[in-house]
Image 1 (cartoon, one colour):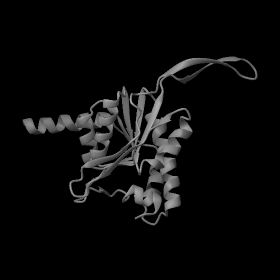
Image 2: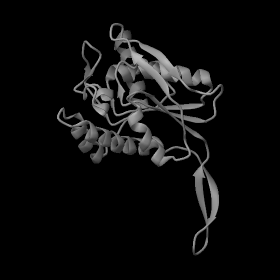
Image 3: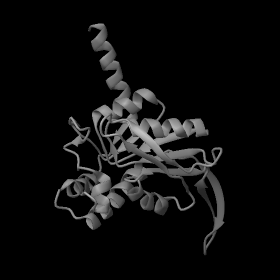
Image 4: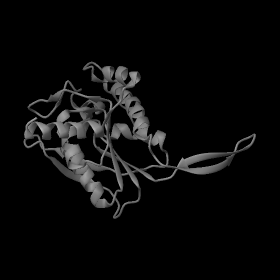
Length: 223
């Protein structure tokens, strides 16, 4: 194996180790309906919520617990509560559609918004909104963003969170392109990536193919 091929193989193995694509049949079924260009915004939003719930369920499987004693109507019982505080960071605006699902699973989670838009000429992210407090208030951050396309917004968001002082960061999305997964994995090799699907490639405009179009436009009927 040549040096270039060895590096490429190593990079692919590293990305594969960090990328978690849900194998759940319900995810595949709902994702098919989500991709359909005839799906109207109300149903699209509902499907984003349902898929996000399933992917988040898998992405949070390793959260630390602490024992908690309670009393049931019949007996004392040793149960558990989340040990660390969780922060939800939806990337505006498409990430908003995933917040409700995350809060339903983790009602005590804090929600902080980061606003980024992609320059359509350079495909690079530009920050326009950041409401993080002055210092980190949570131990685990879940970045919520449906589409991991070029990876620019995801990398920029994780950069912001690490400078803020976040100890653990996970990316939770719906569809990823190989280019985006590689970019995020290369920039932040400690960040696991949890998605419903890994698609084929990006087109010349930076959209995921086959994808589902613009997730923000389809959620809010602005396309």
